[in-house]
Length: 299
Ligand code: FAD
Image 1 (cartoon, rainbow, N blue to C red):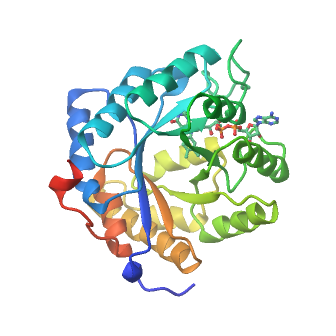
Image 2 (image 1 turned 135 degrees about the vertical axis):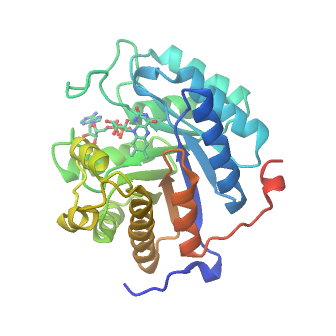
C-alpha cells in the first residue's frame, strides 16, 4: 500500500465533513469558523448530527437550515427513530424539505439509557431500514445510512450486520458512511464483503482523527471499534502536550487516508467534532486543496 502523501494529484478525492449542533454561542462561533475554513475545499456535503432522543431536534434543524441558506455546500441532516412516532419524524423531514435540505443521514439511533436494549418507540420507525423506506415515500431525498466494518454491537454476527445494510440500501439509501476504524485492512475486508453481498452502493469510510485518546478508547468500547495496541503506545506520554497530540492525530489519520487512497478509496467523511484544523490538515496532506474561494463558498 505504497502511496505518497499529497496523493490527490489527480484531483479525484471527494471529502465530506460531519458537525454536531452547537449548544452555546461560543460553540456556535467555533462551528461557523470551522465551516468557513473547510468550505473552500468544496466538500460534497456537510452533515449535522441529531442528539440522542431528538434532544437536538431544533438545534440540528437550525444549523442545517443555516448552512443551506448561507453557504454553497449541500447540507445533510442526521435523523433518528428514537422516541418519536412516524408522524413526528415525517414532520421533521417535511420541514427539512421545505427548508431546501435534500439529503438525510437516516439512522436508528441509540437507546435513551446507555447500555439498555433498543426497542422501537410505539408508532415509530423500528429501525433505520424502516426510516429509509418512510423517507423515500415522503420526498426524493438523497439518503445516506450507517455501516459498521466491525459490526454493530446489536448485531448477532457479521453476516446479519451485512444483511441489515443490504435492507437499508434496498429500501432506497444510496450511500453508507462507516463507523470509525483505525486499520485500513478493516475497511478493505469490509468493502470486499459488501461487494460479495451484492451491495453496489458507495461505502464511504468515516475518519475520526484521534486527539483525545482516552475519549476515543471509551467511544470505541461502546461502538465495537478495535483500538490497536500500537495506538496506545503512540499516545503514551502525550497527556499534557495537547499541541503534540494534535500533530500526532493529523499524522495518524493522514496515514490511514493515504493507505485507503492507495487501496482505491476516493471518498472520505471526517468526524470533525466541530474543529476544522485537524480535518483541514489531513485533507491538505492528502493533496485536497481549496477549489473555490471563501467568498464563493459562503455565497
Ligand atoms: P440500524 O441499521 O437500524 O441497526 C443497527 C443494528 O441493529 C443492526 O446492525 C442490527 O444488528 C440490528 N437490527 C436493526 N434492525 C434489525 C432487525 N429488523 N432484525 C435484526 N437486527 C436488527 N446516532 C445518533 O443518535 N445521532 C446521529 O446523528 C448519529 N450519526 C451517526 C452517523 C454515522 C455515520 C454512524 C456510523 C453512526 C451514527 N449514529 C448516530 C449512531 C447510530 O445511531 C447507532 O450506531 C445506532 O445504535 C444504530 O443506528 P443504525 O442506523 O446503524 O441502526
